[in-house]
Amino acid sequence: MENCWKFLRRCGRPERSRKVTLAILGLDNAGKTATVRSIEGENPEDVSPTVGFSAVDLKKGCYDVSLFDLGGGERIRDIWKHYFAESHGVIFVVDSSDVQRMTETKDTLANVLKHPRITGKPVLLLANKQDRDGALREADVIYRLSLENLMHQNNCR
Ligand SMILES: Nc1nc2c(ncn2[C@@H]2O[C@H](COP(=O)(O)OP(=O)(O)O)[C@@H](O)[C@H]2O)c(=O)[nH]1
Ligand SMILES: [Mg+2]
Image 1: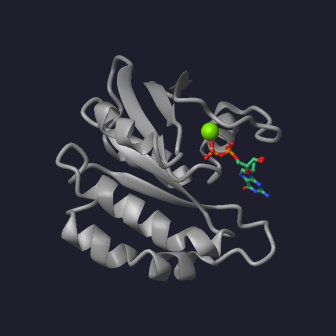
Image 2 (image 1 turned 90 degrees about the vertical axis):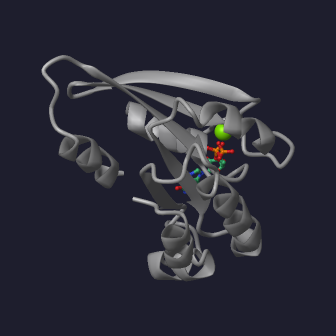
């Protein structure tokens, strides 16, 4: 997550606050809402499944950050694209312990990255649930998702 704020810092410090919008994406149960809660400084435990969409606004240094926490169920993923145009970047959350859904995760990530409203924008991949038994380590997540190929194919930053 720190990389995300480092990226914002590299963009330069504007004299007045600047608005940054990030889409929080990933399969259902990946930990998107828990991630948003952590960023807000709130307890990430006992989160309920997100129905549709929730937006969180917070101030980070001189940035006014809006986080779009979008539902990740298969049938709702189709709405994600409606938030791509106004998103400056994406935080894609992966449940590293859910090895069985890595192919679905990879296909979903590939669909996001190739969308013309996302291609070229910064993407942070968060390998979540590292505390769980059997969680894939960072390098394994990168391998299972063919992340390097996906990044090159889609001009990711
Ligand atoms: N052990 C563990 N559980 C997590 C972590 N992040 C989220 N969870 C749990 O995973 C479940 C789904 O989290 P949630 O944020 O609702 O997922 P979402 O559907 O992607 O928004 C909840 O029971 C969370 O408490 C984590 O890093 N470690
Ligand atoms: Mg959620």
